[in-house]
Image (cartoon, rainbow, N blue to C red; front, side, top):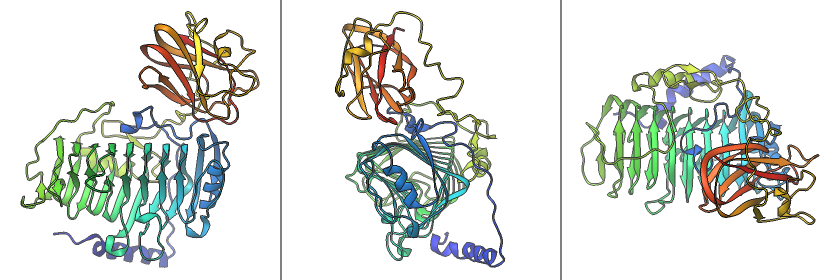
Length: 515
């Protein structure tokens, strides 16, 4: 039986100490552009996860500078990309105040905010003994960072012990190509590496490394906290973890193409009615890698294509219900997004080449071959493949003569100005965000809209969502004005919601076109 994580660290830490004494310098490969390839998994649902796409890009070398960037925005939803380089720690992370932020000292606080990307650049970004809080927030991307040795007790204390912790009505978070690590278990003062609690949904963790911790992470803080879920874990390395890889209480999670090495006590713990879809993973040198553990409230799983290499299984008794030694599916899980599975046999090699910070954001091509990201950032609104915002779709503009309304407006503007065919008139919200709708007396089939900004305000609109007002469904999301296409839908009212902008938007025309 393997030794707990704290004991197994001694040899590794000794090696690091010798390297430091010898003056060894570890170099890191160049990083690639932020959000290359776009979000995957459940983070693509519920309108998608675009982070700060379309917003201002700023550079930060301290935690205080990160908070200043958040607080310097026009609003709490104004998109922003924060490029981080260097070591972020307690000594350089202070609280900053402002109307667009709610920060705290000694942790990175993303609270009551949206439309943010934090990405490591240059020689790398290390959050040392200081975690990242996400609270009451949405549309967040964290990419290419290392978060290490965050404690909940002992010295110093930070972030409740979670490297990355999400809590209280969090939506759409994508953490990608990051390294989350501790130096022991709960008895040494550490908690989880990647935790989701209190109504956190639509999250993806991809191409990341989680290691040297007593607890990998959880979804749900107790057996009654079942409001979390829709989480995807793919192409991650879990190494030298005692348990919770992850712990899933209620909700649905999809784990595919992950490499699990040295899960010392238990691995994927599906309990309290949870459903786990476990596809083409490679489990190695581990114990009880899947099942329901430490509770009599069972969860379920659907398994296919996994490899169990030197995995041991304990006896089933009481609140210990391992899925092995011959794991069989106990439920079925429907996955709403597309994905391509690497064969499980190549998972160790492809994860080794791609997962973690400072790997150049490499990904698998679905055929076991690591690929460098497209040098063109797919979130760049100047991408030449994007539609020309001045070139509307062909056909009849269904907005002409239709009704219009909305949820906010500024003095001197009118909702009717967005469907009068006159680019010299416009509608504006009361601030930087708001929504405007076009409606008809009977259902119309719509597949494209064209948002035209008034002269002099081009580029002001940042993040947006297009909504089927009849059902509340998100038809499209992204950033910037112009042509927006989606699957044809029959509706009586369509809404363009601006969730972030660099100033006061001026929408001259909200054009609609049929399928």
